Image (cartoon, rainbow, N blue to C red):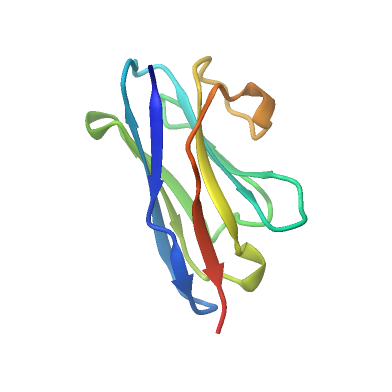
Length: 123
């Protein structure tokens, strides 16, 4: 059974950077997409970025130009490099897998989810 584990969250000052990792284990093939989502207190979960097996990427407007998604299939790990962080980026960040390898930020299309990692941007 596929399992996802996020890491790399923490407290960072505005303007700082963090890199999140999403490690996959279990039964897995290369033909899947990985998405990053976040949920702030009192707000709905929102899609941040996604990457397909062919490394096509898509970003939410709010993070475009600041965040970069990537993946290392040999390590079964995806990454989210976050630069120029803002207080409004504060949230629990989740990674998820879409076994149909789509390029979308709709959570309904994602099959497996990690437990989340907290990112707090504050001075």
